[in-house]
Image 1 (cartoon, rainbow, N blue to C red):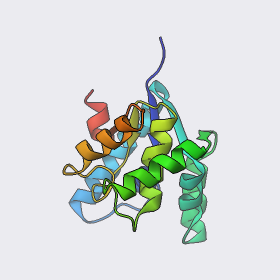
Image 2: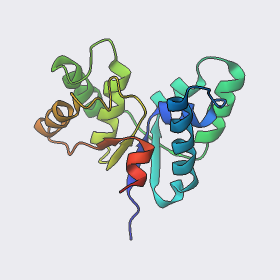
Image 3: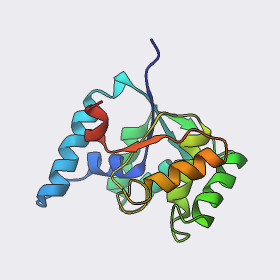
Image 4: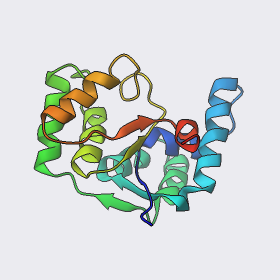
Length: 157
């Protein structure tokens, strides 16, 4: 049986590597991320060079911790088709033009044919008011959109 495919967006890795936060919402997301991480072998997990670059930014110690988490995870290429889809996502207002990397995360997952995109980015990627538009833009471009969800949502499936 084939394992479901998952694109792991940077915010999940950030929640895994971060120190426990006093904000209960963030702490709950950290716990959910850790729970999903403990069953990640049930999935075929992928990242992209964008995830690697984002994980490498910032404080060197934290960047090293994030980088260690993604070691050994398969890296999807950023194909020209993904760049074109990302442009469509921003031009058609699925993702704000100010957030091209968020559009590229979605596009890489769609062009790569992945089933899920795992994220905590509710502002631009998993925004309930734009998920439908994002899906339509992907479909209109000829791609099956990934199911955009958080770790806790994916564990419920």
